[in-house]
Image (cartoon, rainbow over all chains, first blue to last red; front, side, top):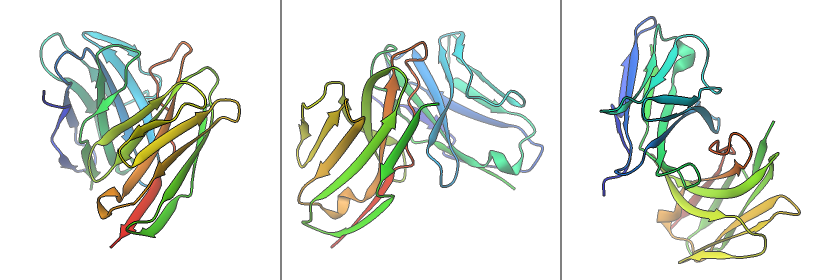
Length: 113
Length: 113
């Protein structure tokens, strides 16, 4: 059973470009969570999605950030017009239901030049 | 706001030493507390604790929760260089947002040969 997959593992963007981060949950998991880890900071919750639904996006910046989890395909975290402050590691986690342990992917390290 | 404090922030030991990592938390509606090990990639699940005073063990690692004092410890005996990592604790809220994990900044453990 493959774990949570994220790609790309490393992403470099210039200021103003768009970043698209992908997450494929573990097989059988329909709950996806995105977290951001800034340098020297702990992991911070961003958004929780189930298939085709955003359940809670309270941790996500209101502008430039969006997330989706379509019926088919991976979950996508999209950051438009990136700025240097968006440089961080973005982790995706999944669980089979809301009460279970969250299993994390390897993360995408975004660097904004 | 939920708060998690881990101590020490970093620790350097020699192989064979025993270490104790601490996690104190303030969570409005506590459900469980999770420990993760983070090397250079995905946080890897170690333990989930829900009941006070019951020790969970996995090999050389063990953990216990004190719900009265809002505290958990993670013990590692006979440390090995492969134990070098950041150890994260994360309480889970049982309220309306029971999927949110609130992470501490972690304890960076370095085990020298």
